[in-house]
Length: 576
Image (cartoon, rainbow, N blue to C red; front, side, top):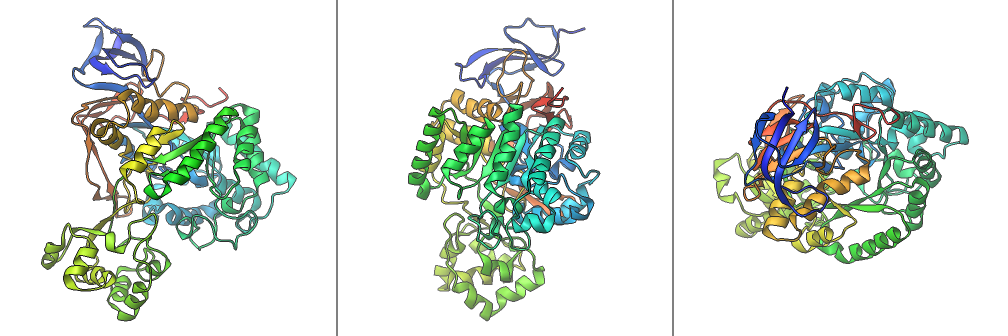
């Protein structure tokens, strides 16, 4: 019997722990790294020649919504094509458990609105062989996976289960008995393997009529706030107490309107890391981030672990008017994703509708505006001359208002024109600010969400190829610590995030000079005859998950060695 299943030989090891890189071998047996250094030849079933290649820990993506996609895509793409070996699901307080059968369809309606996952895809892929949270984990466990998964408990389904749908949506304050039940259910979920809890708290506690800080994009499908938006601070603290009592877990929280004192109270009560959502690399937010980072520093001096999740990537939003919902309520009224295509075409050709659209602002603070949209492809050959041009350029050429220019184009293309728009006003200065700060975890992929216009799961590939190799914002050692070890520490992964003897063999082997990612493209591969935007990485010679090769020369090997990491460990519940 061979000493090792696999030996990765002669690679440049960047271990993720900020240690200096060195040339060496990695010996793997039964999914575990059992030797690092120099290993004699002839002791392994398989030898991988990594000469001239970087050998590093697989990337850990803390912010995804693959809760549905896991049931149809074992590789959790785009993430799985870009060196990610572990993901955390159940972010933003959204999720599918616990969920009574009568609320299952409504849960999918909510996820369609807040995370733009096509309803037809969810209906075709989610097995719904559960009601309770432990039952859902068992279902995920049964699904084939090429990546590891660690799940949050979303606060929204918890509130609906305990308070009832109407009272949860109304923001009714839980009674003592109901609070005790919320805590019991969270304990039950963590006993089964959950890693903590997540919430979006962007509204006013107990007031569903108040506008949320996130605006319409983060509201429920019926325009009302999500239950967690109107939850009470006392409820957050009660859930934090569960983590404090257990001495484990972490929290993901979108709560910009909350006072910093309340953030600190949650951190103190839970004793857990808190992931503050979200920090875009926006040039207009640089001064605001300076103030926020000073607070992170102050929290650290108090021993409170509050980290920011940074949007440190700059993928374009790729879209057609078949599905586009980010230009405000008037555009959504006349050209939103809930309308049939024939109605959208009729509206965009209607002068009275165009008059209303022209009255709207052209540009938006965080999403590229109408005049900034750039044509990627056209259906009508007569429109080929516009490919690569912005709507502002087309409008100037035709002496038309930008609204008329884009409507003319879309109507003549029968709604098949594809555009790209910038996400936020991301620039190099904003990206460098986030990457320079030690309290910021890079990358917020939103993997599995916003499928029809966003593919940000390539964030780690972009970081290394652009901000390490090209711009030299970070050393390679620092980059791998930020991409793997830091998120592993925050998430409570017990044996991942660094290359060391005794750790799980989640490993990327890549060509530093060749590492790259493709421009996002439409793929018609979703269940329910739906499409999505995806972006594959290149330069990944090998990706190993739990000691098995899942990617070789940028191609899937159809090896599904990923695990549900119950309590941060593969194959065991937190209490085991």
